[in-house]
Length: 319
Image (cartoon, rainbow, N blue to C red; front, side, top):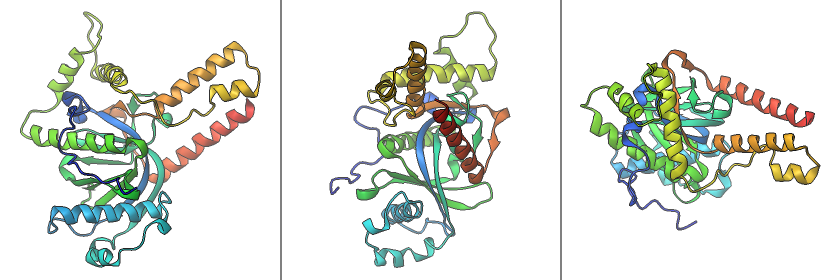
């Protein structure tokens, strides 16, 4: 793993350019985000600002927090990493805050105006829509983001204040999406800097809608515009992606076919389920409807996930 070092600045566009449409990534205030299916390890409360640390020290501290939170969540083994006592001593006052273990699968949603964390797509209802979040941070409150190295290369974290002024470092295990997550955050940071002095995002929404396949001569409500925009963006995103989803379907069609004879109707249903699971397992554009957004707790999310897993088990047993 000696080669898993981050040698490039994620605030610089990759050689092939930024991954996403700039206009779309600036429409967070309108509820449009790019979301990643990741594992939320948890967070560490930071009782002091990192402002007095230089940038290298801030990154070093953030990576130490990533390791601590991931180990507490069981996403990394303590035995795999020797304790750096010198580092612990250097950052002692920053590492003494409350550690909140997450241990849940989430949708990590990014725009140039907001970073948000909510339930995964499969328990949100209609794919492409979001109506629940347990954390939302205005980009102006986000002070730092970083990616891990070596053993922790697939970890990504950001530091932000919530609405009550509590500062936390949120840590995610992003798996194969880690580089894309970090690049998307970088693009969002750059756009946030560029658009601070510009007008609100309503004209952006209209401009994005003009690019979609829309009905002629029909008045369309704002929420319908958002859904159409997200659908169009996801078509383009599918074309951009050349890598298939990593997560397997709940009932891989090939395995079921080998296990028993199935009717053509059941086989079609299984193929549809495979396709739906693949869609849930990959990043995508989503929209949040302002009038239906609900704030939930981590405990609420755990209960929802447990209920969803129980439903899957019952369906498997019935089949």
